[in-house]
Amino acid sequence: MLDEKTLTAEVAALEQEVVGHRRAVHRMAELSGHEVNTSAYVKQTLEALGIPVRTMEGTGLLGILDTGRPGPHIGLRADMDALPLPEDVCNLSRERVVRSDTPDKTCHACGHDAHVAMLLGAAKLLTAHKDDLCGIIYFAFESGEENGAGIAPMLKTLDDYQIDTFWAIHVLSALPSGTICVSAGPRMAGAAIISLDFIGRGGHGSRPDLSINPVFCAANYLVNLAVAFQNQIDANETVTLGVTSIQGGEAANVFPDSAKVLGSIRFFNRDEGAKAAGILKEVATDTAKYLNCRVEFDPRMERVGNPLVNDGYYAGLIGERLQTVLGEGHVVKAEPWYASESFGYYLMRSPGVMAHLGIRNEALGTGAEHHNSRFDVDESVLTTGVRATVEYVLTVIEKGVKPANA
Image (tube, rainbow, N blue to C red; front, side):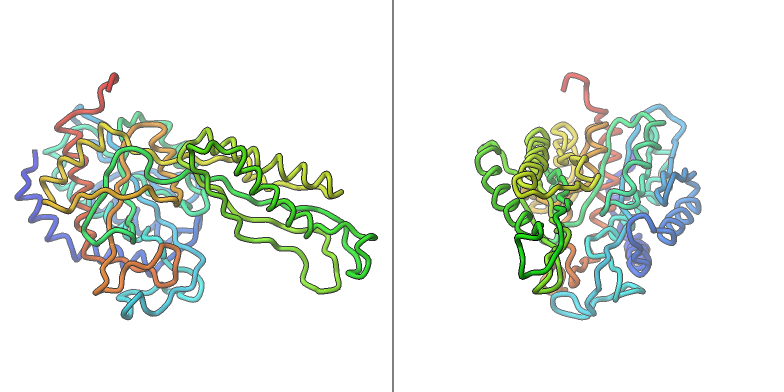
């Protein structure tokens, strides 16, 4: 087995290469499902390491490192897409070290560039020590995480493999740089989208009696929905209601034909989330009926996402290992994050862990909220992510996969 002193030196020596990966991917900043250059960059890097790469529908990739010896099958995952968001020249306190090539249109404002870089770094180390390992390691580079475009092709591809456990890292601006949370239990929320249109009948603003005003219908819907949530959602569960937009009409004297309502709900109990998703539609249908409108639901409202829940066995193993490797104070606890993540679907297939890696560094100006134009990554933590990923593989190989009765 690879000794810790050697691993420490090799991770340190890899720092500039990993930072280079992060900056290259950051400049590309491609939107969900369109990560053509990013995917090509990842594929070229993996193949240069001698790792065979399987492509899939869209731009997702799966690298496969088969040691040729029996052992655990371990899946490691990173997401690749950027956001349709302008990027500020500065982060919270200084000019950023790298910008998107299209800063007026797209940027990596969630840290996926860091995720790709860390997994590529781990792939290099694990490949270099292939002879010290056993089993098969899968490097899953998912496209379209932000809009859900890439999860179905990835899961379809993974159907062909029996993977014992999954691991991923998400950088987190709420945690201080260099700290990492691998706690068991719910870590990120499940989500369901709100996207519906109330259809009325347009007309002149002076005669509401001759029209059917969908704006009033949308407004009533919000009031009714808030009351329904308060009285029907289990008081012991949390389901957040985030209505973000009502769009209906543009003129002061014209009733529009329709009004759109947008938003989402978040939850950590999937059953309660599914119940809440049903309430969204039931209240919309009933509200439309009594105000003489009709409602059209976006097909995405049929999907209820899964909360991300870390497995107790694997969280315990890697937590203990990282306490030893990283030292006192680096492994921390953190409140569950209400953002949503497709990695929850991986963990429904096989148990595992998503780690949250802190990137908040006031001196460097990193720590802005995710999905914010000033979001930035403290690059000094990237090697911590590489180390944690490699340690997960080594720990599972050493300790074994989760027993069936655990």
